[in-house]
Length: 359
Image 1: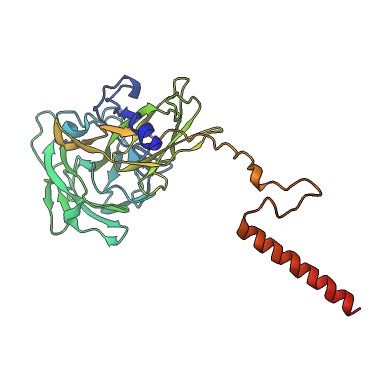
Image 2: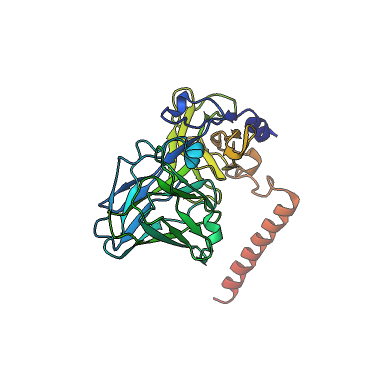
């Protein structure tokens, strides 16, 4: 009953980082997103803690990045994830013929709430394939959302073939021809094979990954309801394992408060530990649909376990102490224990007599 009362008193509002703001400044129920940033070398693509880092292997000798390409907030993915301004997409070249680029994630991606965007697919084709924990991922699970043009006044759009996994440009080297995908299955590897279909121009396509994030914020209290400063709060995967990009931890401030601004919105476990206070039980927390936009998920409110109170040593039980020297050692025991102890004494005496008789 005491544990239940403590947990009930620790309902914590969960906030999400508004784009461009700190988690502490975000209003409850807000959510944020993070666009990926690519680096060459090392050839990696990252989004946020909670989403796995991707390592890149490519036959593209000119593989690079481009900070000048932006998906605005008015594009279809931008309406979900906000502008990509400030992120750095991966630049894929076709070369004279074809190149192949594979992104291998450090652990399988979540099966929802993230997307990848391909832009400037015009004078080339991109053939997509993916694998998951169980093997090849069917093309339908890549979650093609649609094609569009992100350039002002741009009109051409690439064409997606769901049977072959080909995203085909319109041959002319233009700008802004884009498509986006929201996978519905965990992805371990994503491979893009780029083939030049134009005799002119310099075909370059760009790859982004965008993920939804949320922030966990709250306090840790002891069983008496007193804030616990210096406690360690750990967020882990639902089964207790490390989150991709984790572990995610925070130390409570003087008021017992904490804020972990980058938690991917999937079920997680939250636990608190404090010096000398033990470890509270881990609590499973799952995101819920946002009432204002059911297509999105938010952490509405969670209960974080209090740091466990220290276990006081048990007081000595006088009845269990040995009697003073010279007293009957059986007098302080119960009838059953006395009978057993008495039997052992008798056996000992009989053994002593037997040793004397057979000397």
